Image 1 (spheres, one colour):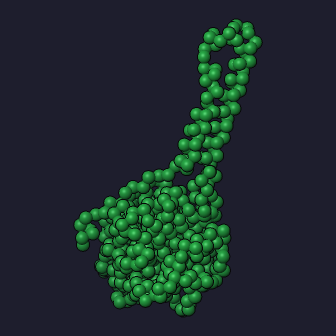
Image 2: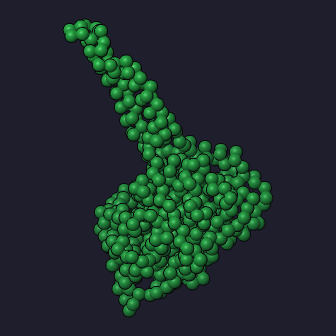
Image 3: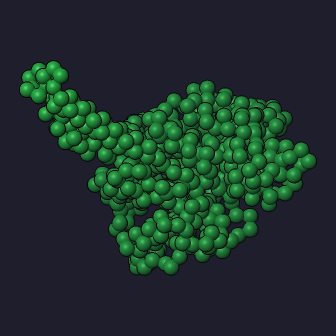
Length: 500
């Protein structure tokens, strides 16, 4: 493909220092407060008051010393206050202790939002370490593989959408047609897909991204509310013994879980130099468990240009078929021209039994680069079959013609001719009617600045909608606006975010 022949280099992002905002003011203050000290800069013997044994000279030296001490203490306190500012939040929304206040979810440099706090935190650590949003997003996705096995995993199917502000190009990560590994079991493509995305656009070394997820799988992670609910619904049919007590009952909220077999797979993947080898390491173990003579080969994930739709408000990008991206574009083309906002931030969609369970995350930087990732095992815990050698749950998405109705990320760029224009990213989960949900969310965003600003302020102050209003749906929104990175979610507070 043409895109592969001429790689797009995604520039390394510069780090934002927490004290940058107040640095210039501090320097000016230091100059102002140091001026009185010039009075005492002459040598003692040059002053008639500083004769040996003279009392006025002693008082002058004492006053100068006290003044210098006071100024030093004042500057030290101010510097400690600047450096003590929090760099981000787990959705708490506490602004940094500085003169430059931010709303919840707004950061100078970059941000990440995901359904699990450890994964958002891991993404932020990589951003601070000099990584870009692709590094942070891929590492967070691998983290979710460990801590949210009910929604995603190495056996899941991944779709992605990346807008590169350095080049102005938008690229879709596609998994290829779903294929059968064994009867009722889908062929896993997660490792090759994430490895391919990182190899093309990432900055940090590939092993660096797997370190955190490997530690979580080996040393243990805490069962959060999302996983606990899924385990409770699964009952005794849960993936034992991985996520069950000794008596066979599923783990509950706050319990500690480990997956040492998965940790071993991630360590092997960290050493794989190519996407093919990263997937082959897993396939070899699965073939052993399933009694296959040799690993099944399948279509490799690809990176290809995203679908585009020109709108009055800018250019829209989404994923190609067999995702729900084409359906999204058709719905937007047929949408009424009126931009009247709906009374609810959530679309009232009928809930369908057996709706695909999916996992989503989003990252954004202040320059306008956006990465959206969505993945699914097709149902809660996928096939329910756990590989004893790999610690991986396999997907039951096996039909070659299966449409990934749960995959429909979108990015709206205000104007391709203006590199400083606003960029918006939306990704949703929890419903097979995701294209309708995304259409609703985008039209509401375009309803007008007043309606959008009102909704954002409501979200910053606290939840304005009941968690049940969206059913099991979750919507993540990221944006680059006025040289800031912004993240939010519906329902408000459902997904922890981090940034700096």
